[in-house]
Image (cartoon, rainbow, N blue to C red; front, side, top):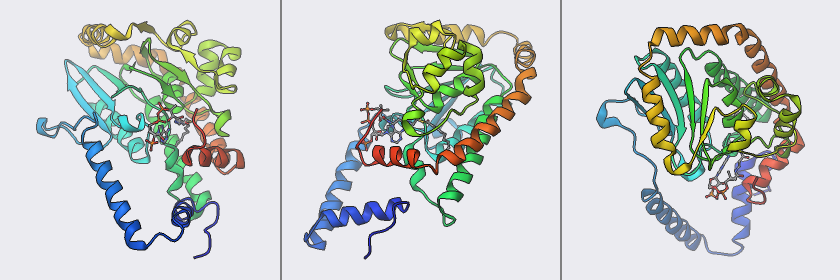
Length: 316
Ligand SMILES: CCCCCC/C=C/C(=O)SCCNC(=O)CCNC(=O)[C@H](O)C(C)(C)COP(=O)(O)OP(=O)(O)OC[C@H]1O[C@@H](n2cnc3c(N)ncnc32)[C@H](O)[C@@H]1OP(=O)(O)O
């Protein structure tokens, strides 16, 4: 068949793969494929992905583990083999989990990651799933989803705490400016490589980061893509406190359990008093960032960077 166009990511990848096989008989190619898939199944079975708590009567999510205990609802990213990259489905699940947490009887909500990463940001494969309306339609849908996703954090009514267990990238870093406290392991790093990806900031970071750390430090992160250590992020006010990795979980959860016993209404109202004046501004910033990104996703700079990552030519 003729070679598919450059935007037809999936068919182009298939075409390239078939082409690379040269004159290999179809039957042999099929067997090789079956062998590969069988080996992947057995390795994913032995991975450390945590199974959802269906036996405890909790809502099941494919990419999250959500638990509620001691007055704390914990939302844990659970795609450790992809470094907890956020797939399209996972964006939807996070929104659902936050909406449920906002109404449950917990006093504090915690977001954390399973495995060695907190989160590697947007799953760059999200952009390969092109709808019939083409790439423009995909960019439009993504901008709507991004605005809804970030809006859920802006409107979240209870104290929201990030327990950053390892490196954090992209959108998982920018939305930290919308959390009420950020506790980090000393293994964590904070990286927003938007220029390297032909992108621009989201998660309201274009507004919250200059406010938190001053415009010059925000520029280094958001424009030049400087990766911060946990200590540096703490010195700049993005992180509340850093703990040694060896005692991180124990120290943080002991503290959170104590905080969760504080009067819930008082905590909610205090959050409203602290945050409400900013809400309208944050929604406006979110809308603007999403609309700028809608254009960016169609730019050569962004398409080339995404293709380079997906074809394994580039990493951060
Ligand atoms: C659509 C709505 C909203 C969009 C909002 C805009 C959001 C912007 C951002 O979040 S920008 C940031 C995007 N993230 C990245 O660019 C990170 C890309 N990943 C990497 O550079 C590296 O994987 C790493 C540095 C995070 C980790 O490197 P390493 O320790 O060497 O691990 P691996 O690369 O082997 O990772 C294991 C496995 O996971 C895949 N993977 C990791 N992160 C992502 C990702 N963000 N998207 C897709 N896939 C990811 C990686 O490719 C490996 O897959 P493989 O085993 O090779 O098949």
